[in-house]
Image 1 (tube, rainbow, N blue to C red):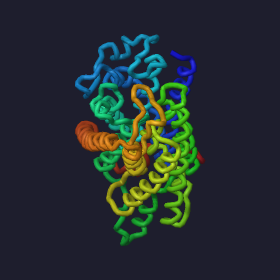
Image 2 (image 1 turned 30 degrees about the horizontal axis):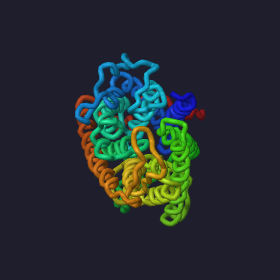
Image 3 (image 1 turned 45 degrees about the horizontal axis):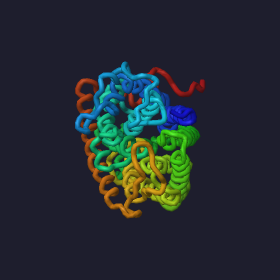
Image 4 (image 1 turned 90 degrees about the horizontal axis):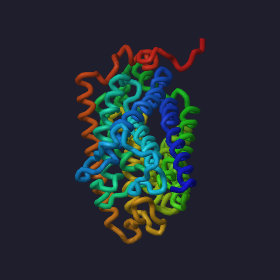
Length: 429
């Protein structure tokens, strides 16, 4: 073990922890005032609940001894009862104690389900959400993370690579969010996009009702996510080394490129460069570079970011203007599509010249003479997309049977802050 590596991974762990409350502010600023508190507290409590789940059985399922590459199990990891605080698992993180690796991975397990809430914000019951999150983390996140990140996971064995979670975190959350938007349904008063013939003033008012309540919160949340993402990606080198430096630089440049490309797309399509769009674009760039951060060079990172901003912008605009899907905060367009593009782009732009990371040798992608890497990435995507979407769809349907997912119309009208928590964001009287 090296003291410098331990210090860096501890720091990265703290940075990634910051991202879950940052996501709360990012999402909270985008919803209406009456749902601001509920949105932030959902992120906050998910972090707490999943921390416990991860310690009791989550880490065991992901990083325990692999059972045919499908799921893990090691009795000593249940409840972390048998983990020696001095032990090092050379297959996972040879430079730091396994307990620190457990803590680092906990932050990924916690933020991933929190991403989903943006798709069904403003209308989901708190109790049902918590039940779903425990089940989702156990039955959806844990298998995917095992397949890709456990050294003996079957997708890992096929050659799929995911430096910091494009597949495990963003594709899984983005597709699950799409399922949540479909199962929970549209918000009350949310006009179908193509029904521009709305006849009453009430209908028109409802159609323009869903505006961000606090754009400074959106910018603050995006900035803190950007900051925390350096731990997310550079920390995934699991050492204070040149790969961490490369991942940090590619992360920053992809975020910057996507912020600019989203801004330009908005400028061309809508006539104005919106502050919200710039913030969302930066997050999309961070999502897209996540699977590739430790495998690609600077110029590739810029290309990945520029393309991500445009692609996700077009999907978000299509969703809002041409579909019936009420993905409240465009989680699918940002995380699902961004994660899909980034994971495929890893198979295109990965370069062995970047070096090696823990347990995985440097690899070349299609553009560096290895088409097999692109095939491996496409296989991983083709497996995880339906597993996350249909698995989440069925879980949501199951939860709805014994704990209804959606609040009543009266509660939705009042807002979840009051109806679910008995609190308000602002006391202006």
